[in-house]
Amino acid sequence: MIKVGAYNLLRVKKEIDFGVYLEGFDQEILLPARFVPANTQVGDELEVFLYHDSENRLIATTQRPLGIVGDIVNLKAVSVTKQGAFLDWGLMKDLFVAKSQQLTQMATGQEYLVKIYIDELTGRIAATEKIERFLSNENLTVNELDTVNLIVYRRTDIGYVVIINNLHTGILHHSEIFRPIDIGDQLKGFIRQIKGDKIDVVIGQPGFKRVEDEGEKILRLLQENNGYLPYHDKSTPEEIQDFFGMSKKTFKMTIGNLYKQRKVIFTQTGLKAAEE
Image (cartoon, rainbow, N blue to C red; front, side, top):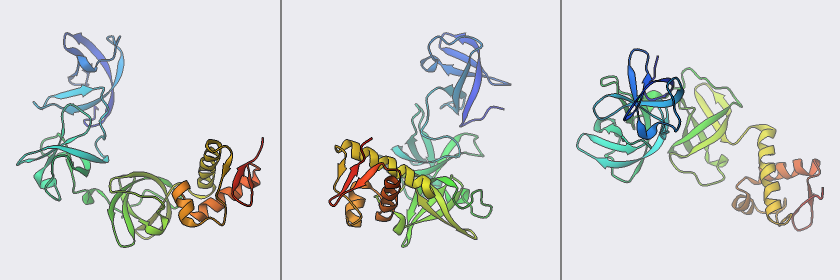
């Protein structure tokens, strides 16, 4: 079965003056000439994205939209009408958000966090700001220490509500944030704790994987600064955060790990790369 709003691997059935037709099981699907890769021949298989054009015809493209059905993405409004707004999602045809699917009246030029879905009435791809109905922590698909994709959803008194893998919600506490973040930002993180339907998340990777990633960053910064950095375990948390983009706790763990590996040397004034 072909999937509208997703990538499909389809075979070229025949060539025509204005493109090629692809085998769509019980139908032929047009791939316009401007999107046909060079040297394409009948019988070739192409990965294409399927959507409906302005005349409700199913059409293929080799363009890559900013999101597919099921994704939650930050998109810019390019025009607004009485019926709704149109968002730029990287294709020639803009993505429609009905007025009934907006939380606030959208304005041209502003970005909005939306869910891409198939409208049941029209069968067309659409977007909605009303994301909550697509999210649930009732049947969790994640476990503690799982690495996950996070989308910053909204700010609260204790931190930020984040969307986990486009399915669940969790809390990223202020105490775990060491760099500026904005609504709509997409981050990599892991599940720190699950209590019932409450999930706490942390940016980065769990355990030593996280330390090793930060270690590569410190070694790179040493290389870029002639093998020396004026930072050590007595540096203030603010200094560490401003330069390295990590907490002082993570910094101390990381340089300790690098020292054990004989990759750095501690001096009275800072950190030095060990000679190989």
